[in-house]
Amino acid sequence: MKRIAIIPARGGSKRIPRKNTKLFFGKPIVAYSIEAALQSGLYDEVMVSTDDAEIAEIAKQYGAKIPFLRSEKNSNDFATTVDVLTEVLDWYRNNGQEFGQGTCIYACAPFVNPKLLQDSFALLNQKNCDCVFPSLAYSHPIQRALKVSGQGKIEPFDASSSNTRTQDLEQAYFDAGMFYTFNVDRLLATKSLRTENTFTIEINDLYAQDIDNENDWILAEMKYKLFSNASL
Image 1 (tube, helix red, strand yellow):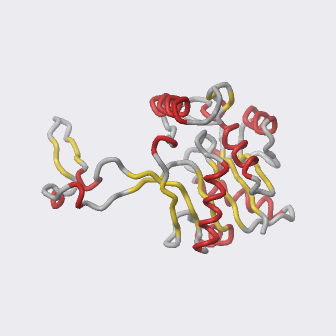
Image 2 (cartoon, rainbow, N blue to C red; image 1 turned 45 degrees about the horizontal axis):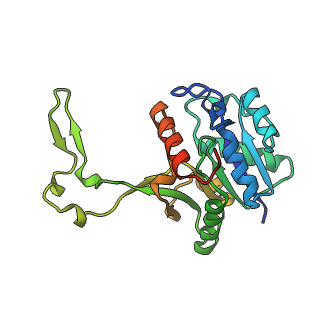
């Protein structure tokens, strides 16, 4: 069964301008996702889906393929990850290549590593599921979440949990924002990565950081420097 790694990396990031080409310890951050995919030995094709010439050139330098530039329709703020993946898979299918499994690796995911990618495929095949992605446990029970009015007054989202001991509340998790390993046919049929047959790998929050703003970037650098095995 052939496998593909798809790394979405458009040029129009807003909160961190030129995020996907920004240097992260001396390398464009997109390079980490490319290198993890290549070093894993899992994929028949490692490609970057981008609309940006600079990103395309960087991707090629680090060993990824750029068979086409992303369409304008799938380069705006409203295009979903599934839209991008579908465009890529349709392009390959129309050009005589089909894949049974794949991974969407986000461009700003420097903590992705070959072992984690390999584990995701092991779980995908063991459970015969549609998709696998890494998740993190919330550090505080979400049942105790508060909302704040414009005047600073607090109110619980779930008043029924206010008097329940924290250790008695169910643990909740959130998407680590790193990658999705998926069954191609199921993705194309459901147009969704998270289905009723999706599993997760829980990871340590010291080795993950979703990067959406400048503060996230700073935290990612701190964690990477302290906890990664890379030589900096």
